[in-house]
Image 1 (cartoon, rainbow, N blue to C red):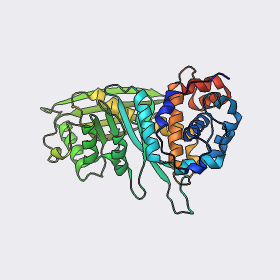
Image 2 (cartoon, rainbow, N blue to C red):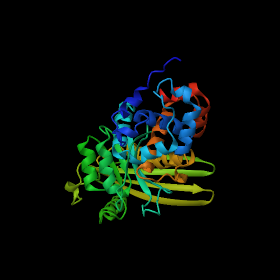
Image 3 (cartoon, one colour):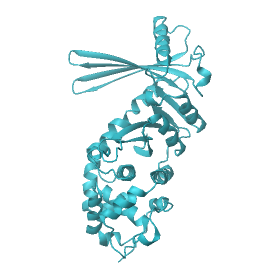
Image 4 (cartoon, rainbow, N blue to C red):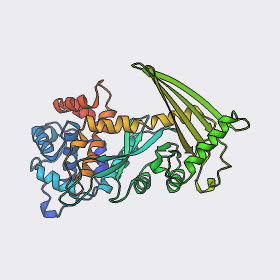
Length: 376
């Protein structure tokens, strides 16, 4: 049988530490990882499915894997992924995608968290896992992920995620939960810019910025350096008008020196009209970007929601992540990484115009297409 060259992606996972003792290593760790990646691409959502897919495609796998002892059992997959170090697995993932993503200057990297709802384990009093992910909006790819510490929140996880990402030249967007001085410093130190949403979790910062814009509006922005942009779009009877103001007038802010790189404040007003009903919402932001490009600012704020509307939605709809009951040891966290690997490969493969769910089906049915996905 003709050998298929191992895809270079797999080389990034060769450095994974093997959690098993030597006498239990009937299968190579890399083979276990590769089979799991392929199975998740093709629709497997648990270890029984991973084993079943591996056995059904044993001859195909033998083209590039050493499977003298066959396909591992579902118990083996479960044990290995429950013991594998998720931090190292995520690091290998980030190194791989960092090498192939080709992020361009000004690309928006959205960071947000998602709870794996059925990952809680009542028997061991283990709470549900909350993963914080980074999403490259132009590329449409997951750049990395980390789990929040138990009894902690996204504030501690985001700096660890930033440590494994190359964000040089990128605009990092984070909602109010991540609006922290330490996170601003980390982003600037790593060569990026930031836009943080504001709410009531930063003392008086949100109210101070709100009051500033109220005053500026009342004065018609007289003698206040600023830029303005407006967009209008709609469908299905809905019309949404977005008005964006950005200003570099930040010297009045007494704590400016504590926020590394702080260069502008922004306000986005969203007016929605559906039939005869209308609603208006205003949101406020701080940023390290200059306050002279409201159009860029508004686009970045809008792109941030891709992580919710594209990444999280796809994981739930196409990968049924919220239904997963994998919870032993580190298995839930490592399965989350497997889903992100599968999603990135499916997104990168563009020879067919199908959604992720149907691409998974096609990859399961068609050996040639599955290879295309791996080589994407």
